[in-house]
Length: 312
Image (cartoon, rainbow, N blue to C red; front, side, top):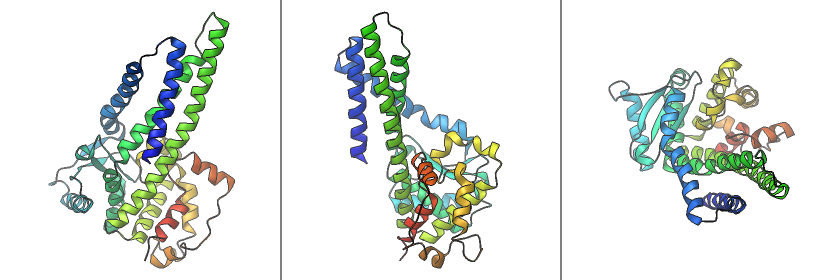
């Protein structure tokens, strides 16, 4: 993961050097300050933006002692400071974590998740979010996400800039096209990094003492809960889905796939049902592969199969 991060910054630095050479700016500090400044601004104001966009309200221990005990126990097992606990007004049943650093972390659940999951399932989902915090996933994704943003800005600036000198105009167009190619490539790498972190967080939840089948059942129910929500409501979560434990915008298709694993129709995935996935060959259509490639989250059937391999 850190090699990917290093590659990202090497690519963007090379892009800045090319742009700076074209503009006649060659000072190393200019590139360093510009890139670092953009990253820091995004990183520092990020939590406030999340709070506002998700409608987060923080809960005191008096308001929800059971949830506080659960988070306190899991964060102690994970070896991290206890995060702040919040509830979101988002209509999508889910949970998410965010914050600038480990001691500034927050774990939030949406209002509708409490009526959907039982206590053990909720614990598994919160364990997933605690693992994101422990592995500093928020920091990593924030760092890599700034690269496509800078590349997009450079592409737009150079491809649509006007210059009376034909040669300089062509050079600017070439840099803009190169920046756009970097934007596409690095954006795909950001999505890949996000998917890898989801697998890691599932494993982290299991390591914190949650049963793999409980985590699988929780994901199944979250998919079911999102599938019942009107499409217009789900569209509101489109720009926020990277924060969630699953991608609510893919819920209908994922529910149809996971329903096939629920052999007894109980609405859960128990140990025996999960074991059937362990050696099963998962075949994805071209459309499914493409959707996964463009998503922040792995294909749900593949994710449940990964959980089945953690099941002793």
